[in-house]
Length: 273
Length: 302
Image 1 (cartoon, rainbow over the protein chains, first blue to last red):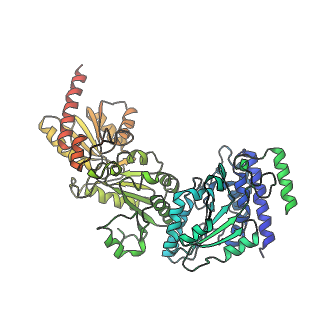
Image 2: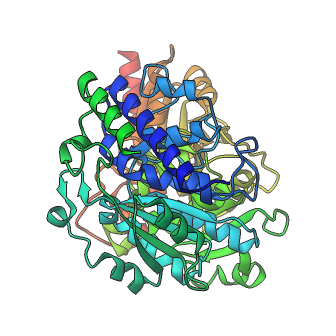
C-alpha cells in the first residue's frame, strides 16, 4: 500500500536528483524544484491515474507543470515512476540532451505539454478539461502553477474561464513559495488576499502545507470540493525546502550547488528523513 | 465540413455575430466562445487539440495573432497542434476603423514561426479550399481572410494545392505574384497592361508559407521581371518571401514589391480610400507596373 512513507521516499529521490542535475549542468531553479518536490511526489504516486507502460492511454489523468522552470524535479519524478530511464537524468541540460532546462515534451513519454514561459499552463489545462467534459470522459486535469506566474494576465483569463464552464475536472495547484524571480512576492506584486481571489472567481479553494504529504494527499483526493466548480489548492511552501542554506533564499532561484554545497545538501536531506 | 468530420471544433474570441449562429445551433457541443481573451483562446485551443480536436480558432484583425503570438509559438507551433487560426480583415479591410484594425505585420510574424502554414485566400474559392485543406492537414495554420464579400476570380474547376501557386493569367514580360484579397486588382491590372502591350503573368500565391519557390524560379527564368503584391507592410510578408527565393536564384531579373509601404498613416477612410492612398487599386497597380516595366527595359538596354 502506497502511503506517507512512500511519498516521502519519492520526494527525497526527486530532491536528490534535482540537486545532482542542477549541479552537473550548473543550471538554475533548484529552489523552485525543492519547493515542488513533495507536491510532485504525492501527485505522481498517490493521485494521478496514469500508466507509465501506456502513457497515451486516452482516459489517463493529465498533468501540466505550468511552472516549467522546475523541469529537473519533473523529469526526476517521471523517471522514478518509470516513464523513462533514470540514466537519462544525467543528461539534463547537457549538449545533445532531450532534457531541456524548461519542460519539453518532444519524444519524452509522460509529458503532456511543453512549458517554460509562464502563464500558459492553466489555459491549456482548461482546453483539456473542456474536451473531457464535452466527451464525458472520466479523466481529470492537474496543473501546477508558480506564484510568480499569477502575475500573468493570461492566468486570470483562464481563472475566469474555468468556473464559467463548470470544469470540476480541473485542479490548479499553486506552489506558493512566496519568492518570485526578483524578490519576495509580497514586495514585487502582492497576491494577497490570494485564496479570496480564487474564491471570488468561482473556484473551490483549500489552503494546505505543501510539504505535508498527508495534507497534500487529502486535499487532492477530496476534489472537487464543490460540485460543478474547478478546484484550487494553494500549497504554502518554502523555496529551497529541505536544504537549510537554500531555504527561503532568492539566490537559489539562480545558483546551483557547487561540489561542497551538493555534499552538504545531500547529507542534510538524508538526516531529515 | 463539421458534418463530415466530428473532430472539428470552433472556438471564437467573442466575435462572429450574424454568421456563427447556424453552427452554434447545429453543433452546440463543438462550439466555444472564450470571451475577449485571446491568450487564453490559443491555450484552450491547444488543449482541445491535444485531446484530439481539429480546432478552428476565429477572431478578427490582429487579435488572434499579434495579441497572443507567444501562445501561438509555444502552445501551437512547438506542439504542432491541430489549430487553425482564422482572421478577417487581412490588410486594410477594416478601413476606417483605424490602425489597430489593420493587419500589416501579421504575415511577417506568423511566417517566422516554425511549423506554421499560412494561407491568404485571394477569392471565395481559395477561402473554401483553405478551410478544407487546413482541416485535412495536421498542424497549425493561419488563414488570413480578406474582408468578405470578395469577387470570385477563379472558375470552380480551378485546381488548388497547399504550397502551389495558381497561374491566373499567362504572360512573359512581368510576373505579378499576388496574395490575399488583392488578387482581383492584380488580374484587372494585368488585363489593362495587356492593352498597353505588356504581357503579365499573374500568380495567385495563396500559400505564403511554405512559399512556392518552384513557381517563382520558373517565373525568374521565363519572364523578365517579378512584382510581389500584397496588402501587408514592407517587411516580412510576401515580398520578403519572394525576395528570399530570388536572392538564392541564378536568374534574378528585376524585382519590385507593391505593398503597404507606410502602415501607420494618420488618415483614415474606407478600404477603397486606403487602397488609393497606398497605391493598391487596379489603376495604381496598372500605372506602377507600366512605369516599372519601362524603367526595367531602359536599364536592360543600358
